[in-house]
Image 1 (cartoon, rainbow, N blue to C red):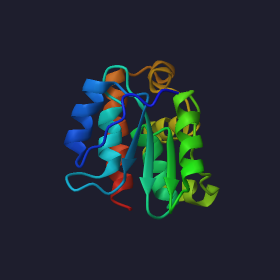
Image 2 (cartoon, rainbow, N blue to C red; image 1 turned 180 degrees about the horizontal axis):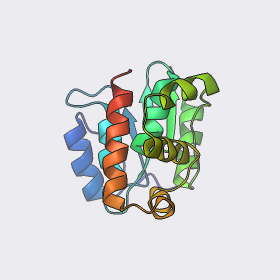
Image 3 (tube, rainbow, N blue to C red; image 1 turned 180 degrees about the vertical axis):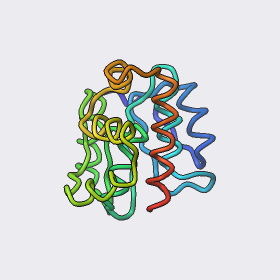
Image 4 (cartoon, rainbow, N blue to C red; image 1 turned 90 degrees about the horizontal axis):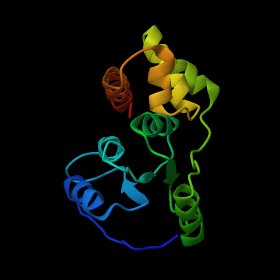
Length: 162
């Protein structure tokens, strides 16, 4: 894992511009940004050409946030005060195509799916099991654009619960 390019950004807008310009393998995103939340930035980062893996950082671990991060397209989530070793390992893992998400209790998943329509439940479950969005769209017989609209709608519902 090369650490070039290594950059920082103070806002979501700045981070998105740098990600487009530098094309990093992994981006670490804070859930709390001054101009938008990290979920929206994650969603936008995953939509750029050759998207980076996204590791979302949050102060507190929240199962709803884990689900929302997954729907937004994050590849991993760390919370609390991870030590440098854990953070380094997570970044390397994501750079190699790995997944770094905490487990979500089935009761939380059940509670969240009751808020969704039939098609959104299928999308929700597939994405939570790591199925790539393009494959989800193909299996459900929907366009990539419609899938993105549904992911956005699901993400907005989840953000309302945080």
